[in-house]
Image (cartoon, rainbow, N blue to C red; front, side):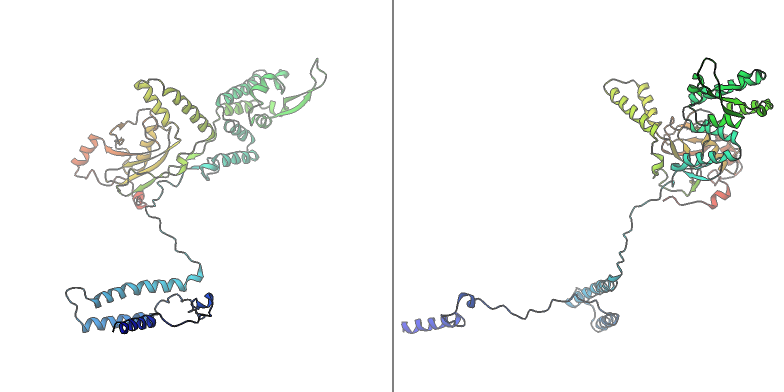
Length: 442
């Protein structure tokens, strides 16, 4: 019996061992053979067509009508919800796959992007009236002055002297010396020596020859370059000699001298870029362009010098007056400032100013926008400081750079008169044409 059960167990083990193998087969042949016919690579799933989506939606509607919804989520509910989620997704995939050959990529929307409070700093050329950007201001003004030589060479040379030369002390010294030459001619018209100016003279070389436009001025008023012999010297030297035609008109020389003495540098006029905004909680937020912070070469050198001096001052104790002076110096590094004035009705009046302009310029700017520009008013800084129109303070001295929000306030006497007349003191006070162009602050 025992042997019988052992044979049965052996038979079961033999059958469970699998198919038999020949002893003559190699190890390579014993390895399972790979299938030669591999299934084709699965194609990406195509999105359902419009007809399929419509049929699926109709089937879902019929299913919902036949089988009322149970209290709790059933398996069919889960299936329907899953189908609803997949249909739009597959439709979007289908649409994107169809448009994949166009190389069109949707640009992401910038969140939180705000519009600049001012597009930049702009100027008006006083000679041509053209609107200039900050980076092209000096170049375009010089071009306008040079083009003016063809119409009025005297005026153009005077503008060139005062504009092209940045050292104001050197300009004044040279202009005074030229005026002295012309005075000698006017006072001594018969003296020939006063009508000649030696170009190699030390005074002429140090004070006049270094000025751009000086030679053009002499030639425009009637001087001519001439080689003349010089006693006790081997060869002739170059002189400016006044022509006989110019000598016959002494009043013209006197007029040209006065023009030279009264000349001023040609400066582009800063455009205020006046804008009116609706009441906004973002009134105190300023997104300024780089024009308000860029420094010129001279300003950058001065800034570097101030920083090196600040490092030395850190090692010493400073009084309150010294700290206040340093804060004011820090404010002076800004060239422009953007100011907003909150009016009684909440609207905002905005303009661009030089940082070194006086507070009176802001009062004039606001007054030009009012319907009744003769009524007295006050301007208050954000800290509550009252800015007086009569004080000779600049914006950088008041801490109103590179931007600031101020508050418009009626004079107390005016406010009482407004209330007595039955009018609302918080009603609009701007000119109607400005209210037509009101903007939204974003």
